[in-house]
Image 1: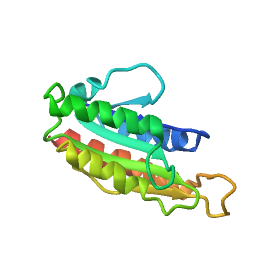
Image 2: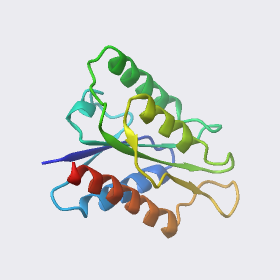
Image 3: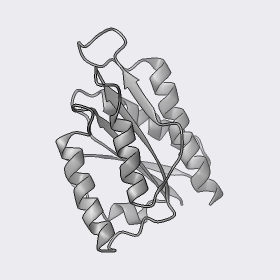
Amino acid sequence: MPKIVIVYDSVSGNTEKMAKAVAEGASTVKGITAELLKIGTRFSVRILNEADGIILGSPSRYGLPTMEMEAFIRSAGEHTQSEKLKLKGKVGGVFGSYGWDGGDVVDKLSDVLKSWNVKVIPPMVAAVDRAGMMGVRIDEEALTKCRELGKAVAEKVAKA
């Protein structure tokens, strides 16, 4: 059965909420399974080999992914360069949350997937706290976009 892995980090729980919405969207496509992998839990980067689709999500830290997500990216990049990971031809997507720095984290994550030869499927989802800088509150509009992202990637996987 085709599988999409959603690798994400979450500090306050907001990006985790987004990741769950992405998985919900992916699961609406018949025959697709979605697996959530939170940074900080134990899993091997080699799980990316088993995936047909890869979606990355992170809260923003000064426009960049969290340090923990950066460590995962470095590790996966090293495995990709040594050819232990074979990601060419896979599809993926990105999402992230931010409070004030413009949501550049999704561009950074997109660049990572492209460097791994993964085709990035839109929409890229960046959710912002519209009420100010008192912490990101993920609204229903952002969660709907996350579901659309999961569904879009799953539909590409299903057609492959």
